[in-house]
Image 1 (cartoon, rainbow, N blue to C red):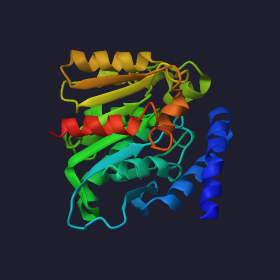
Image 2 (image 1 turned 45 degrees about the vertical axis):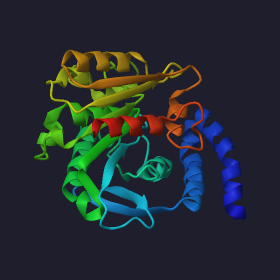
Image 3 (image 1 turned 135 degrees about the vertical axis):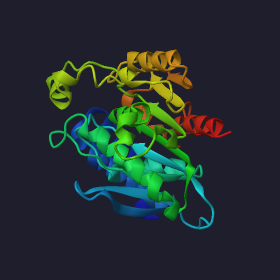
Image 4 (image 1 turned 60 degrees about the horizontal axis):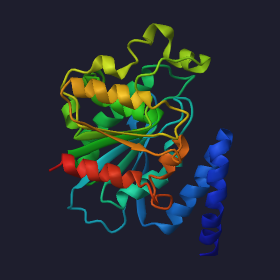
Length: 293
């Protein structure tokens, strides 16, 4: 108990450092996730291989004591990190929030730059979603209630998998397997200006990388979440994406939080420890439930 209280006391400091020093993000997220793991009733099945060729793995989160014969809605969550940073092990706090709401949560890894460039990480995302659709029933998941979501670069991957049917088609799956998608602060339709992002996407792909160019009118329902306080990913990404989906007669809803919600805070507010005036997970859950009616 003393160890748990100490970890919880360190969390505000960790998040403050995380907000300013990106290099320390892994350490601070480990502190947060350790505290949540110690205080929650999570059950996790770790490092399940979904792509043997690339040794890509995913974690499946549920709750201790759940009945084995009850099928749960499934959420696949893609983390962000500019397509060059991140690991599934850092996002237990996201899984904890949605497991508490009754979801079976899957968090996959995907290949990062410089090992991978566009569109390899999108292909990895599609392979993860296809694997989940084919295998999650064995873990208690309901494939009729398969949702995907992501933050930042992860929102881009989630949206590209959901809205560009070529990626799931390569895995012999239709995008219709996705009940709905939620994108949090996603850079869906930007044009790279910084050299690192030019290198990640390649100038020859600047048109292809814009998700708006791949819509066909059969996209899953989408919730696009952004905030006025996000200085990392421009709000125009949400606006362009929402307009393109609307023009294709797709179902789309938008949420815009205020100036106090930054690119990092919108991620942290997925967990109830940080959700006061803004509860991102609750907003996503409410949308998913309405799309299931």
